[in-house]
Amino acid sequence: MTNLEVQIQLLIDNAPDDGVTPKLVATIAPALKAIAQKLQYPQYYILQNLQERWILTTLKHRANPELEKRVVYAFPRLQDISLSSSAGLDPQAVAKPMPVIHILFQLLALEPVDSIVFFETPGTISNAIEVERTNLQKIIEQTLQQHIPNQQVPPDIA
Image (cartoon, rainbow, N blue to C red):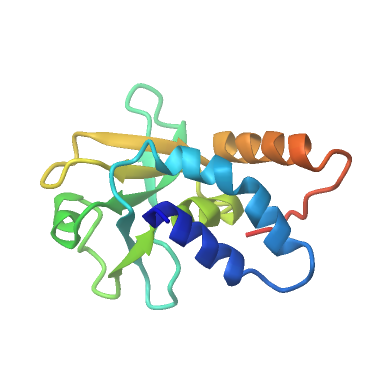
């Protein structure tokens, strides 16, 4: 079993035992794995507050400041968090390592988050891959429609 397969199995094992959710997680697992394989690391560090909520950074478009998006940064190493200007400002913030599959799965349910920015090169924030929540949701919906036609997907799957 690869690291990603182990992460997927953990997600399935920890899903509510309601007869539906574990099957849904297993169905969408190949889509989550395909996205995770484009990323370099099996886990990333996410800044969280003391209530274990992910810390959001609001980015404004340089040419059009009224355009903004809310992102979560995912760092390859703990020491890379200090490279972000938004990191370290909040003494209540804690960086926690999270498996990449779990990060992607959580993104499905994080309504205020527009995307997660995965930093791919330790020691710099210039090389990043952005995973947008709406794109991830479309991929998951397409996967579910192929495998479970005419079935309503619960909005609170994650």
